[in-house]
Length: 413
Image (cartoon, rainbow, N blue to C red; front, side):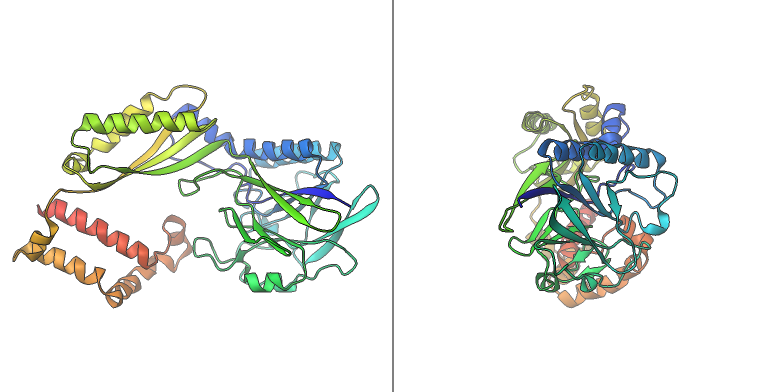
């Protein structure tokens, strides 16, 4: 029997947004995770799907807010009224040891336990259409390979695995419930509905499908571009088709601004205003944007002067007072460089030349960069450090050296 389902994950309901002072955009961001969730419920009803899968992290923190729980319960009741089942696993942000017992979920909600992975049968019109095998986090920090314990239902023609995990050991995310694509490919399931990685990813686009839908609403400046969920269509013959559905309410955007041909602040302001106008036309929703200024420019010293960029940001924000399609400049990052002949300065027999040659030594020596990394590792051996800064790879170190060179020159020249 043909059927459809929606696969979503990482709702992070009631995620706190800090550092956004304006009341209009702050309100939009605070409500964005709820609005994205409501959109998923609307889509499930509109498409009349057989069921909804949520692969962990419904809430942003294990001591989840009552507001988030109430909004989730309300969405589940809307689906119950449409006879749409919901299959849920908890993740590292909302583990079982943090769930509260204050609110009862309607009968259409099936939360998998945290013992061994368990399979549940799904029926449509009295006909068995699929089996869903799932497992929830008992605590936040799960280091075991749980995917290896998943077993498909031999009596089911279509088996789905529902898991919050790090498949492929992405270094951008905590390595919780780690597993490999190879083991998922050979486990005997038709579809792996994964969560935890906020970037949309199709690891396998054939049986078995291995899918990360990403989060339905970006929650920080790194999570740019459209966000949403997947509508999955399963044919009579077990064939699978995917359709991505946008759900984000506020979009994050990052953009490099070339500065090599900009010689006056007036030109720079015209360029920034032009990009803001374009973003307003391109999107039917509000946008939070981070501009990064790059290249050598005569304006470098002006841009690096204390308070200059913050003054520009505040001026741009003051113009965004509308209720719709706000383009909010979250930050302007200066990565410009002064217009100087670096090769000549590098050859000079003075402190500036010594400094530039030292930067080059690290730039050209992987062993010296490895020594740097050993010194920095103390920051990343503690979870609190990792919360604020990602462990750099070699490409990051090279990028940092570029910034070191620029800042050093600013002080020396």
